[in-house]
Image 1 (cartoon, helix red, strand yellow):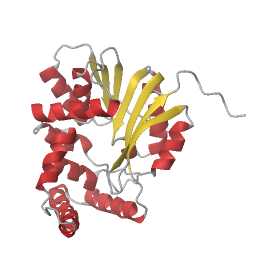
Image 2: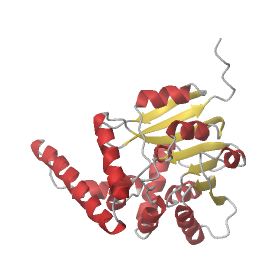
Image 3: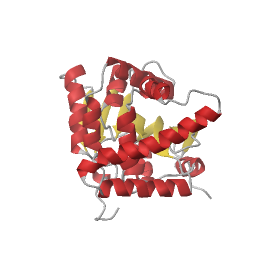
Length: 278
């Protein structure tokens, strides 16, 4: 990350998203997390949310019964999570929220180990993705789960997307929403034409509605993150699989995309240390 290109204000985007959070979004986030973990309850489990953003998935984990720790590098995001905690779990010692970095080894050493380490769409925004993945994996207890989502490597397309993000962050703040709308319209038009050629409804509105149902997310705030989210890295599924496997994990579930989105991975850590290779 160069000094000439500022970091995307993730926390400000989450603060704006927080205005849209309602019970339907929270229930959708909770159902999404339960599906990913294949568990209806997390009672008795410890859950770490790395890069908690708005805090909606930390809230989902706490509602499912997990003792939860949330942290984010962005102070505004920490405030968002604290807002949700005050509203839904006031004075609850089962949910702790802190400011910290997944690249800060000293801070991570203070956290301990967790049954579930969750980081959806975060580690590729740290400026050092593979170090971030390694550090997140190091926080998983033996027999525990690592759940991450990483941007898919689309070759030249991903590198062009990097230029789109750099331009967003170089623009004056007043022009950024216009730029997001322009990029989103261009891509939605392309997707709409593809749907039309397939004999489907070309309008995107049904897909926008499903976004809220699937993970409780917001289309506009997702587009803002996609267009502006920087630093930005990406990886092929095989590279993430091999990297995490070699740290003593087994891949138990994976959902991949053929487009610009994230590939999702669920790994389980070996209960005993994996011996060094001979």
